[in-house]
Length: 68
Image 1 (cartoon, rainbow, N blue to C red):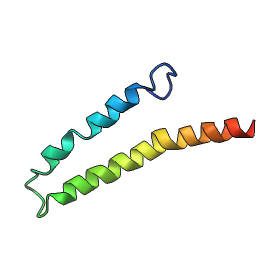
Image 2: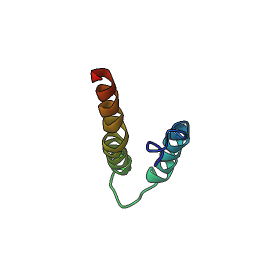
Image 3: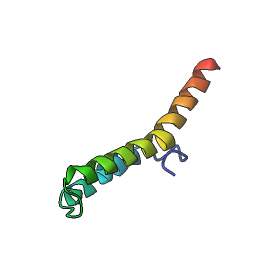
């Protein structure tokens, strides 16, 4: 939603800061032998989603503008 509305790109900073909030809680996960497994899985999923939903669309848009 942030990327679709051209008047709201500054809110992306707040969104990215909010993504960091669960990491402290994930370090306290007890059902994994190593707590870094939960943190690593979370970071991997966030990176994958951010790449698909934000970085790729921005890259496509920049590429289209360059071609025009």
